[in-house]
Length: 207
Image (cartoon, rainbow, N blue to C red; front, side, top):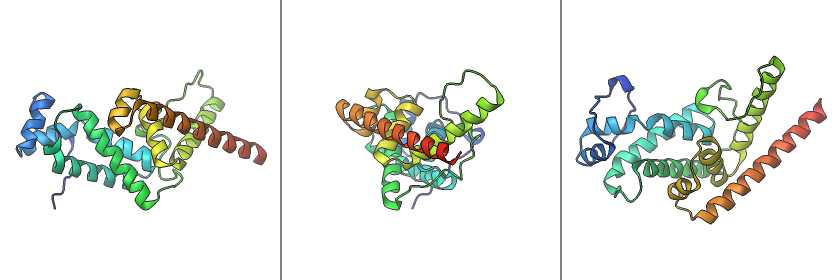
């Protein structure tokens, strides 16, 4: 079994080749080219896994699995889509399969709220202490509710609302038609909104 260990960017031999050439060299077994190629995606792969799982150790293991799968299957990449789309497709599929297999549905107690890689974009108009606390609580609630979504909805929120991919990109990544992408995203947002509303109501009752 081939084990791929992500290496620090400082250890990667900078080949300064266009991505297409790196892909071709990787297909021919050039490990330096593959290391250069995958180095630009490692953090993005890990971030998607972390947002899908909410656990750093499991996200790291999942990112490792994705990198191994990319290495083993790179010869099947035909260039019908961009290489990044192909990478994110593999990442999404691995994450969804693992979630379904292990039935992940956990609170994000293992994820530090200050972790930049897990930031949720929420508009903030001022920096008063009480507003900062409220914003952190809101981010924590959003993280928890995202993790509780079914995986096919979870990935929609991550790709569109957190990572900012276009509908067309999501359609290509997930191999879904545009209508399905829009309807599934709409449903995901509706469920997330209801979960946040229920959480706020419960918190108000406690107070």
